[in-house]
Image (tube, rainbow, N blue to C red; front, side, top):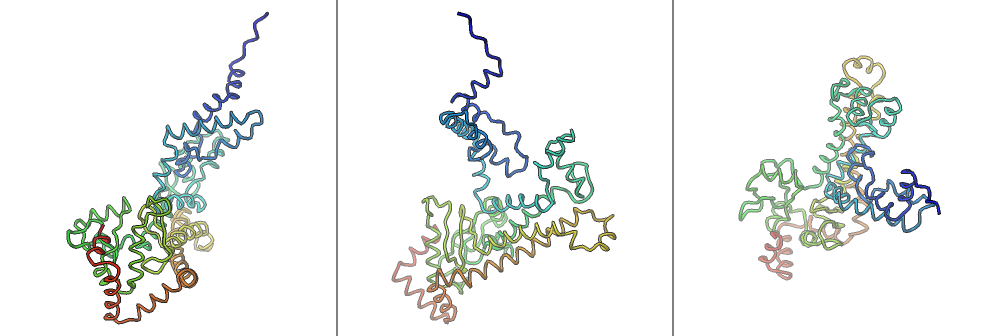
Length: 397
């Protein structure tokens, strides 16, 4: 009997691809270098959660369920080997990081950063270099920015990160985690302890400079002060709201890990969420969203805002990049303020009356009381529920 005809390398490869092991290798060894070079997509390029690749594999009718399951297993193995899902988690486990990346995505729509997928295809079709650096340089040259010796105007790096920086600044300012008017005190917010407190005085920072660094780099914030000190700084907050919020700070959230949690009423009478201990009131979230939306609108409409006559006078001195960046800055500032006001109005006029009508009425009654009445109520409740030593230990823990 004659030997069967040997298979060509292409046929052998095709045969391997149609086996469970071949599909496992397909998922495990997938080329991730073809993804766009922006930070958002590159974060998920090795993750098994990245949908790219699944559509083509599962659309193949000549692959059975076993082969498709093997592909998924290969993707999971690739993920484990490369920390594919842990990398985006490490990068996105803080509200400011999420806000910054959302701002970066918005910068593309604002004309402040290149659309890598679109420009890459265009440059490749023209037979030109299509690396990330080449795309940045081409985008800068076309749009009045400066990058790597190409173009004239403001640096592309400044334009690219303007909206993310303004959005994160808006969230930081309105979240109550850092008080920029108290730089000498390490950025401590009224009613909260210092991150690095002086022994015996949680309202003073032992190292204001290091504390600012801890707040900026790690997103650290202090816990609520003991009632006596808290009331001295925040007499507007009722004892009931204080106790409720103190208990919320020790709540570990739905997964009992303390990573994500929320409350319908914080110390300012507002809805609040917390991620990794960083507080995000509703109005801070809407301020950040407003900054991003305003930045996009301001940058994309910059040419329309400046009339034709003005544009002709400044065209030689101010390229389009300057106008877009200025429009983004103005729009982000207006959007942040508008978002803050919108969030606060929605909370005060709709959310609190619906979710917390009794707490809202009690807070209004508290503010109308004299200081003597407030002290009597707080002392009576604290003596009935727990002694002051226990309260102090809890709030300083």
